[in-house]
Image 1 (cartoon, rainbow, N blue to C red):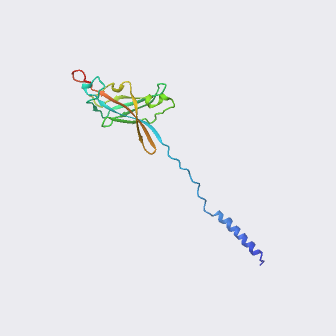
Image 2 (cartoon, rainbow, N blue to C red):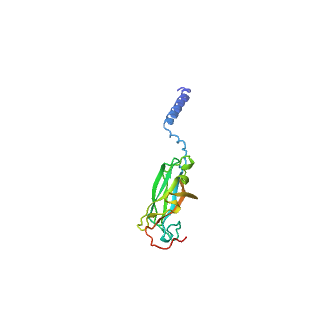
Image 3 (cartoon, rainbow, N blue to C red):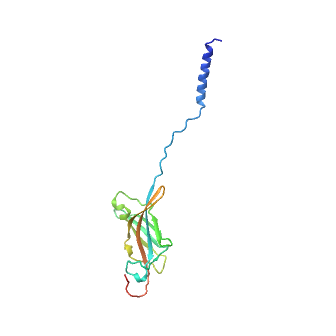
Length: 184
C-alpha cells in the first residue's frame, strides 16, 4: 500500500465521523426566556356601616343608641362626567352591619370627575327589619352619601385595593312612640 494513501484514508474517515457526529449530537439548550412579573391589579372598594337609628334620635343625624343592621342592602352608584350611570352594584351588610364592596368593572377615564370620590355615591336600598325600614337622611343618604378617602389600602402580591369610606348610613323605625322632641 502506498504510504500517501494511508493519511488520505484517515483524513476521509475523520471527516465522515465529524459529519455524521454533528447530525446526531444533542440539540443546543433553548435560549433563556424572560420572566415578566405578573400585572398588578388595582381596584377601588367602598366600605361602611349601616344602622337602625333609635327612636329618641329621630329627626337628627345622631346615631347614639343605634343598632348595627345585619342584612341591609346599600347600592353604590357612579356617574360619569356627563351624569350618565357608569356603575351600579348592590352590596349586603354582614352580621355586624358592615359592608365592603369592590367596584369591579368600574372604569376611570382620564377625566377628573370620573374618579370615585367625585362620581360615586352610597344609597340605602332595603332593610331586612320590618320595624326599621324607613330611609333616614343621615350623611345625605337620600341623595347619596359621598365617598371619603381615608388613606386605606388592602395589598397582596398582585392585587391592591384603594378603600373609600361611605356613611355611616341608617334606616329609622317606621313607628316610634310619641315622646318628647329628640335630644341632641
